[in-house]
Image (cartoon, rainbow, N blue to C red; front, side, top):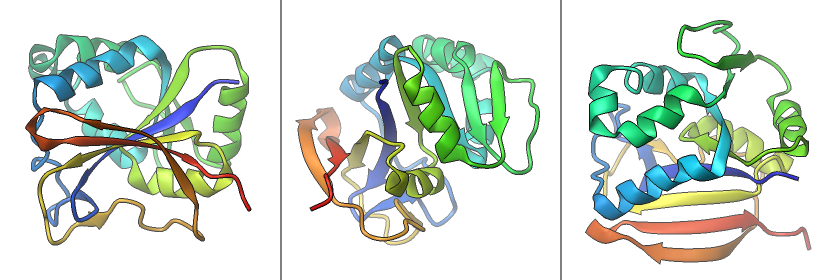
Length: 187
């Protein structure tokens, strides 16, 4: 069984995006960049929600995206992407497939198939939907040393409490803390 992990960035006060809906406040550093690039070696499928997909599709295939980080651009552009969307059915940024219904079931089937890890990048609303279903094995959360005061909460819309067990804690340069959790077994 493959591991499905969600990789999310958050402010110290728990916002995934700022009040304007951007992530411009998240400042990377060389150590975080190395961590991000390393993900490409461990994954063979990327899952995203529609908004994250459109944001990434507007950047990674561009000359600026490739120049900014050729390693990340290569795996973002080349790996199969699964997009949870009720409105999109096709897009030129491929290879991409779209799932309108039963996203958790689709992810569960991917998880049961052979392959490397599956990454859910960003997509906090999708993660909030998938987390209670058991489709996600790990949360990998990069906490930036910034307080935003407003924005979109990281897990807005999560149904019911989901207990978590911390399995790793790593400090990166620039004050970023990488927290890794897995859903805790029900008591």
